[in-house]
Length: 314
Length: 276
Image: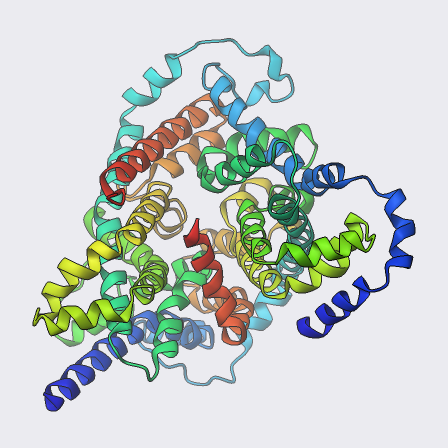
């Protein structure tokens, strides 16, 4: 269908007369360009630029829910909020949890994603699209729906524990115990993000020229030695991209722990993002914004470090 | 040598089948659970298959008593408006950024990249304050507004626009076509695959978006499906899994059906995002 309309579009070029009249009514390329970018510009200004400026300014005030009607009535407290947030035990706990999520989640997801991409790229032609689709499926699944299934699966007498019981293992109270709750949250998150890693690595692998593999195998190098000494260095740009993408995703983790455990038990799975959400819900708007700025700084630092360490060698 | 190859290939298939089974397992539980009665859950909490797939009681309750009809309508409105707005606005911006030379173009491109990378959690609090000022709290408009022009959509459109030869547009310009004519009659019809990619990705983003609708929507008549489902799961006593899993099917089904037919564009969206 697209083809049909496009040929109509090209055909229209040969009808200059009808268009000549409309030219006078429309502004030149520069004016039109600005007109075309206006919708983006408006939404960007209202929902990205202004909020960014607000976030930075309002973290230095004592804005609370009472100030919503009169935002100019706030007092400036400068960096007091940062001191308060960075010394609050609940915030520090959520920061530690988030570091654990990133520290375990990112490498595990990337390793699984890479191995799956490798498996799909190593000569199996048949059923490859099917495997790729199935592994990618959790990425597009709604997180609320997914969390409900996982909650159900990991209930005390649910499918997982009765599976274990059949083999004589007494399953734990998964979501009621801090360590296992965190494991379940991580499992759900890994399930949901592996597909993204796999697709990106697969795209990277398919861009590696066939001759490179052939040359290496003629050299007599073993499979895994080839992976580590040839494939991984060639994939450096992809690895960088996936690392940054996954780190940002895991640093901002909110949905999975919030929906699975509501951050519990006793805040043991609460992420920084959920801490921000809760402070916001309590009306501590300045605290919420300060927390999110701290998180943003964390994201920035992690990204810059990764860009430096993993930057492709010249 | 050849036998070794066969052994390796079957090993690979085995591993891939196992992984696929693990990936699909939660979906199987959704489908099985949605058709179970409360009695079945209590009698056999660890069981898998329902007694009958013809038991639609959970869905009936969902739509007649739990308000899921309204949530579904809200979700459809939010996604439809988001997709249409993004297709139009993103292609306009992408066209200008790729094909029209103007002062400030690289600055604007910078804005797109910044907007793509700023983590959402850093922005939702001030965004909410703005929504308050605009009087859009607890409205569908408030849920939709920040998603009207997604930066990733602009980026995808621009990348695609770059691949369209300048000569084509130049020829039309020489023939006396106006800029709007060029955009709507020549550029837009050539944009098919990019439009498909952006539609899919903005549909997915708006359909699955959770945090922002959760913040903006405050009464049931504004809930989208994910919000309604999440609130139901937090309110319901923890054993009402039949209902909740039926709700999960309602949320999952449209996306799964689309994925079945348009898989290529889903994965293309990710791959294009990876190109930045």
